[in-house]
Length: 218
Figure: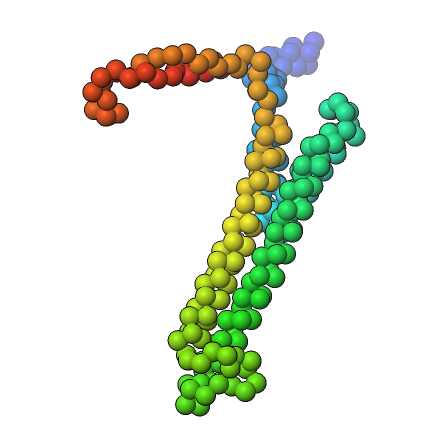
C-alpha cells in the first residue's frame, strides 16, 4: 500500500505538457487557392521578339508554329490557311528584302572601293588614270570624288535599311504574338455623332466650329 500511494503522489507532481497547436493546418487554410493569372500574350510576344533578335525570321516561324499547334489541338476551327499564308508571306518578304539589301550593299561598297582606289592612284601619279582601274573615262578627280561619295552614301543608306528591316521583323513578330491572345469583348462598341468645338485659344478657333465626336464603349 505504501508503494502504491508513493507512485500516485509522484505522478501527481509531474508537470502537465500541452499538446502543441497544429499551425500547419491554419497556415494552409490562409493560402490563396485561386489560380494565378498568366498573360500568355506577353509570354508569347517575348519569345517571338527574342527569337527575332537572335536571327531575323525566327519570330515569324515561332508564330507560325503557334497557329499550327492551335489547328492540331482543335482549339480553333478550320485550318487557318490565310493566317498561315500571311505569316509565310512576311517571312518571305524579310528574307527577300534582306537578300536584295545585302546584294545592294556589296555592289555599292565595291564601286566605292573602286573609285577610292582610283583617286588614291591619281594622287600618287600626277593625276594620271590607272590603266588597270577601268575608270579612264573620268578625266578629272572632281567627277571621281562625286561618284565615290554617291556610292558611299548609298552604302550607308542600305546599311541603315538592313538595320531597320532587322528591327521591323522583331517588332512584327512581337505584335503578331501579342494579338494572337488579344480577345475583344462583344460589349466593345463605338459611336460617331456630330458635335461642336467651343471657342478656345488652344485650338485656334474664335467661334464654334462643327466637328465629329467619337464615343467608345468598353
